[in-house]
Length: 272
Image (cartoon, rainbow, N blue to C red):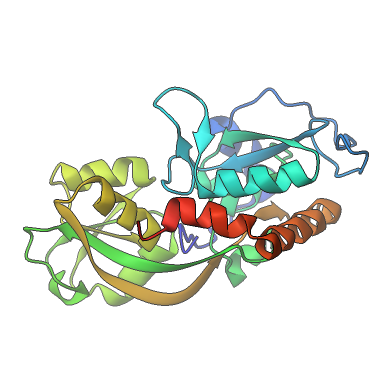
């Protein structure tokens, strides 16, 4: 991601695959020769279904429609579902630890066909992952309680600043939040409650996610945005399934050309 924008950890993929995937949901067929309903062989692990690994929750990109429902929505979910429909495929989303996804472990182990998790395209990640064409441009940002007195990144010295571990947001904070005490969290599902509970004074992470929190609770405000030239891409196992990646790129372009992309985008990011 910018989301999520995580730096690659250089994991030993072959040696850690079994352990790292313990948090992924299971149940899909492991037959790599499965084909799409339309007859094109995309090398899917389950025939007719695009199995997608995603680190959930990360609203507004991917999150449960209601707690415990197991049904997911969000910009990434809707966009990829629309793409899959063009390929005559259904989608199945599996909750996956982001580190195992961005390191390439989950993808190379065949747990899913691809990843969609607001993942920023970086040179480090490209060592372990093949990316689709970019589908979203993002920024980093600073979220604080409106009564905190914090107006900019220059006011963070001595403050506890929450970041998501392994993200580009964490990397940006390390470089620019001088004197701040950075507190790492596994995901936004624990990061946001930590700010609400007073454990931290601010969150530095992707702008769309922080903006969603501001919309949900007006006692919090995004006080700054930081341009980092980040773009998100869908992830594929390194050197695997080029046919699927090409098809995803073709349909992504088609959705942008016919206006469907804008409709989905406006649903989650419209100024309204």
